[in-house]
Amino acid sequence: MISIDTQAPSATQQQPQSALPYHIPILSKPDLGFLRAPGPGLGNLLFPIARAFEGQRQIGGTFVMPTMRQIKIGPVLRFERDKRTYGEIFRPRSSREMAIWARAITAAKVSEVHAAQSAKVIAYSGMADQFRALPDDSSSFRAFLHQTSRYPVLEARYDIAIHFRKGDFVAPAESHARQSVQLPVGWYRKAYDQARDWLGKDQPNAILFTDGNPVATADELGIDTLAFEPPGNALTSLLAMSQAKVLIPSRSTFSLWAQYLGKSTAFWPKGFDLGQYKHLSASHDRWV
Image 1: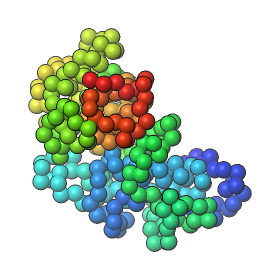
Image 2 (image 1 turned 135 degrees about the vertical axis):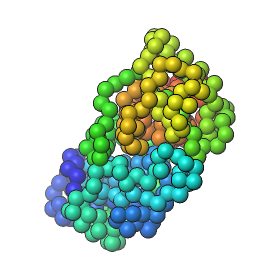
Image 3 (image 1 turned 120 degrees about the vertical axis):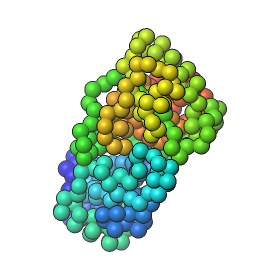
Image 4 (image 1 turned 90 degrees about the vertical axis):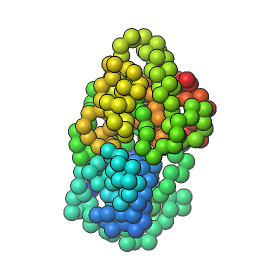
């Protein structure tokens, strides 16, 4: 079991640990323990994981490490670099963690909406109220992701992260309220120029994160000084993005997570309905 500091209420502190609930993120069904049915991308999967983590911190009990590896056909058919199976992003579960998962997955569960201290297993699923359901302080969950990552994570702060999402996103459109729509190359160039002005740097330290060909994407952007993301996987990329002072995002929960974990200033496209995902911040949300 992962060691998680708890801040349990005084009422739960009087209960024996065995009386406190398991907190299990349900990512997709069926879940066989070593593999599960197709599910969403990492950005969406992190919501039930984060709420289960926070539920354990608030109520006490045991956080259940979820099954991450999933079957995913779309990225293979689209020849994407990241196949998004996610089996390699967290360190392997220990035998004890596997036994905890088996007990929790087979027991009767209540949803987080009906959670009570008497529940034996509380199940967390879906996106719920997205970032509005999470604490403003992301430091504890960020530390958990660093602890749990299978591979080392970039620790150094830098100026700008550019997240150019392609893959399964539909054709470019600058003025659009939805997620999962590509942003035009011209928008990224404009946002980059505004980010440079905001930082007061002519040649900021900038890293490109993309699911496309990084060299071809950098050529499209026409930014000569771009570095490419460090080798790794979806989680190490997300945590590396969160180290940027300024984020030039895609319209995705992946970019939203990078901002949440890093408290970076993000330059969002005008027309993007950001308020449906999180509380807007005058100091951290800017518009291009």
